[in-house]
Image (spheres, rainbow, N blue to C red):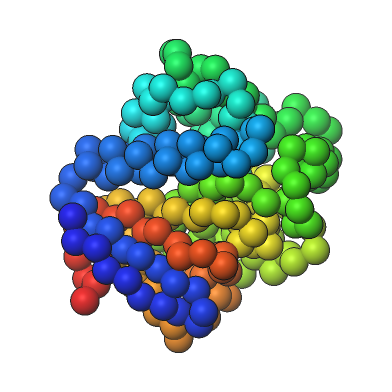
Amino acid sequence: MQPASTRSEGTAYSVERWDSGEQLAHRAAELIATAIDLGLAQRDRCQIALAGGTTPEAAYSRLGQERLAWDRVDVLLGDERWVPADDPASNTLMLRRSLLAQPPGSGARLHPVATDLASPEQGARAYAELLRLLCPGDPPILDLVLLGLGDDGHTASLFPGTGAALERQRLVTVGEGKGLPRITLTAPVLSAARRVIFLVSGAAKAQALQRLLDPMEPAERTPARLVQPSTTITVLADHGAAGALA
């Protein structure tokens, strides 16, 4: 592992490079477990928001083996495709077959997006109400947010050139990406988290990662740069993704 630190317009990043996907998954699980432990040491319950996609699934399977007080952990989604909960594209389904597949991780309380409501807009409003109930603060403060990074610079479902990336008032909004409506947490909520981790894998993400760390990069082109917490963002990357970094 080769750690490096950088700062971009007030946002600090700590980049960790790992040799393999297995090491990446192990480190991600380790950091999430540490954040949960810390949150539960300070509060009765801990709230985390997790990313979808293929890269983090192995990390969630490892995380589910950690012996934590899972019955005090609320698991939310950073975003969700507007598909049924049993659809192969569902992030909820992915979490059920990884983190929640067996004890002890199955003891966590998963809060899926209600994609069976009449419209994505209703789903977004319902998820915002849930977020307010679960998390203190205005905007609500999550203990940890794990995010992915798309090769186009998106994170969660904040895609370049979309209204979701511009949203600053609502906690949850409707995004659009790759032909599907998506429910997504907005930049203010993601930025309010106590801990933010980006998990980035593969050479296809190398340019997007460079742009994320570039202080001159406009957030309009790379919406992942809209995530600006007060704490240092940890970026976990494999050599494919981080190979072009200095």
